[in-house]
Length: 430
Image 1 (spheres, rainbow, N blue to C red):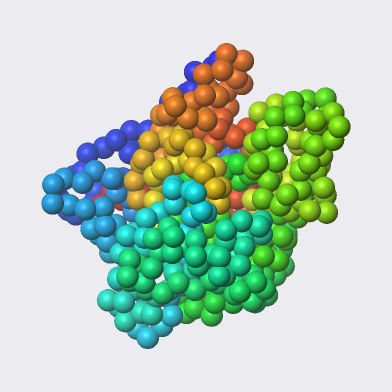
Image 2 (cartoon, rainbow, N blue to C red):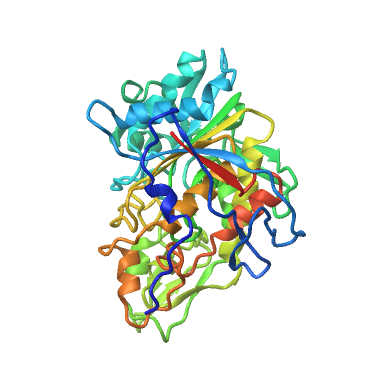
């Protein structure tokens, strides 16, 4: 096994707080960029976009605070200070509806963000005269959030009530996941329009509150995924997942049935030889089964399916944010290898890192990615277990070494390409 290489940004997230002023200016040692072969490169002051010429990019500002809490300080107070430092009060919210998009957690999953964090954001909105509500859209797969009634029951079971969050909860795409608005995608290449939950688009202001973690199909679940996939109606989610359905290589299938347990659509059965069979009519193309198989027996019929998903997701996120004030918060903690849509959460693959906020969702995701790539893998985790294998081909990438089938860079690349934000950023520690 090749030893993981040290990441050039690792030292940034280990610096101690500066006593004065209230935050210390921290800039990445080098802007992180990718060349046309999608390989990581480090260059000063310039960035190469996969389909455009190399050019100088203006850096966005991302604010960051760690999870250290001296006696007398709470994480809620640190989140409040972070949002204030990042400029949330620069948004005119007086008398306006404010959608706070977050994930309420699947039934049985405990990695989702606590409602206490949502209350901090909701209270800040109300202080500014805003009318906040928490929101998410129904799922494509049939689990505990497939319609508004079950979705609300799940949210309440996981602790999301007006008393705990400081505001009401609205399911963005209605009772059956069909209450949607088709909106244009600015500069869209893969999606010219996006099907978004109506309540989300009816809001005057949009705030994303994201649990940053790994993901079995997109590599990481960050701000762009929380917005793009999360705000899509059920039909919108289907459009994003439509690049390809998986197939089974029977010769590699061991008949362990793990893929069937992961499938949220009851699309996998077993033949007389105890080999997995996927019903393509039932399959939603979510890719969970690919990540679940330890024997590489399940593959996508479309080689670019995950990359296509990433790019469509970025364009959906752009459609949600276009034309109105937006603010974005991401908490990098409980970094599970898979989505919070799972009915379980595996051990974290990386240690808790901190809280980030920015007006630029692309820069925010890039900063969180860089922090995760700089972090030391945890041994008792999916990532640590993979790296410990004697025959493991190390990618020197904490996301890809956790879920090798993924292609996470395309999300950031596409979001920047269509003008949603910049991947170049300066980091200010609060």
